[in-house]
Length: 184
Length: 184
DNA sequence: GATCAATTAGTACTTGCTATTAATATCTAG
DNA sequence: CTAGATATTAATAGCAAGTACTAATTGATC
Image (cartoon, rainbow over all chains, first blue to last red; front, side):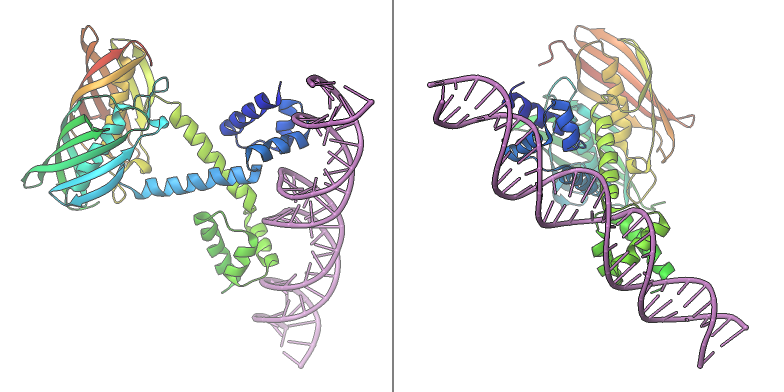
């Protein structure tokens, strides 16, 4: 196995398992520890502890943001009981395993949570929805969802959401939501 | 500040931020490093690196399980192009922040992915859906989704999904899916 | 045979600890 | 007030998994 080959494999290996020590890497490639360290140096790969720390920090930040965010995607603009806009950057993890097409429920989740956020109440429950996927979304595309409240009657809200990605329309949905006052 | 008080605070502090060194902890509590170490020893709190590693490992395991699962929930039974059943155990993280009502898109995601899995093709795209949330689901409840293919014509599949939790119906949906042969 | 890249070896130093032993403080009850 | 217990601080040796640097060895190539 050549140097270039080994270094490529090293990058892949560490990407899939960041928890390997230089010792273990050396054994895996049947080279000395020094060679592994030289490789990491040349490739700018951080040491074990740094890698572990990075993974941990990312996770920590993500867990926080997920638990504190009721919105899927980033809220860009909102006028309660009127309209709202959010954007969602799509990632590989949102796609089908063997394809780069984003799985529908992510697009739905963005639209649904945007609709929910639009309602001026502590909690809003989705009663029903009629949705349509107009065009598939590919990994890496940015989905912009626009919600508009079209009807308010008592606790009921009718909200239309249209999502676009790369200029084209990808999703339409009409949601019927119920505003809930008490939050128990 | 008494010892007992400090130790309690230490546990809380490390729970909210596992990335603090003994040095930083000592400064925070205005005691010596040795005291911090004694405290950790008495409380059985692991050292910085162990804590970081734990966070990282948990995150790694979780990311893997999410990205490798095309189905939201556990598939219990499946007969391709005919019917399928999945169950989803709900957790606190799936609920609204200030409530224990499960957010709608999780219920949708289970139903949608179940419908998708039912289709006998490499990839199935959701074209449209008409859905209805019949009753709210509370944290801890187990949702059972049953999908049934009601119509096949060419690449189109019409699939009805009904979800129940605790015996009562919570969700109904009719999905129009398109089977995709090539996976590029 | 000289030369250069690649590999291996060796040593000193770093962080953030554990483990242990010893010396002080602080306080409390007799 | 003082002996004893409790709590705190100090001091030292050692470890894991490194960095950084220098030097030696190996292999192949011209």
